Structure formats: structure tokens, C-alpha cells
Length: 131
Image (cartoon, rainbow, N blue to C red; front, top):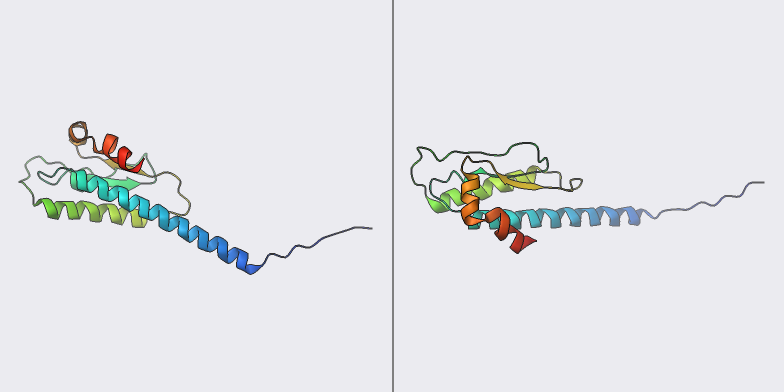
């Protein structure tokens, strides 16, 4: 003679799980946007090539934006910072925040290492503010 026990899961349980997943996605998106704002706010602007070359991806093997400043005139600082932030926000909005566990902010402009050595945006600033 067999014995069995049936367990019924209340549908509200699944609804709560879905709500929690949405809250996690919103929190991750909010944190990524905050990091993006920090990166742009601390980025120097001369021609705008550096500040508009920031990107964020979930795949660290692919390259991001890489604009050169060679031969470009001085830029409107506010306009280039706005463009740089818009680029990052578009990147964040395109990410799958529900299943990705690693995100990489990067700058692939030819002069990114020189700029970061001087301003330490990706090193000290982002790490000190966002951990």
C-alpha cells in the first residue's frame, strides 16, 4: 500500500517571487545608473572623446566605445557629459538585469589609460564611492 502527500502552492507565493525579482532588477538598475553618473561627473572633458567613450556591458570580452580625440576641437562640457550619460543609460537599459551577475564599465578611447592614470576614475573614485 502506498502513501502520498500532496502539497499545494498558493498562487500568491509565485506573485511575491515575481515582485521580489522586479525589485532586485530595479535595485541593480538603480545602482548601475548611479555608477554611470559618478563616472560621467568625474570625467574630464576636452574634446568629449573620453566622456562619450564610456560603456557598460555584461560581456567583458567585447569592446565598448572608443572615440579618439585626435584632431577634434574643444567641446561643450555639459553637452558631452550629457551625451556620455545618455550612452551609458542606453547601455543599461539594453542589459538583462534579471539574469546577469557581472557588469563591466569600461572606456575604450585610445587615451583612456592616460586619462585614468591622471584622474583615477575607474580606480579610486568609483571604488571609493560605490565599493
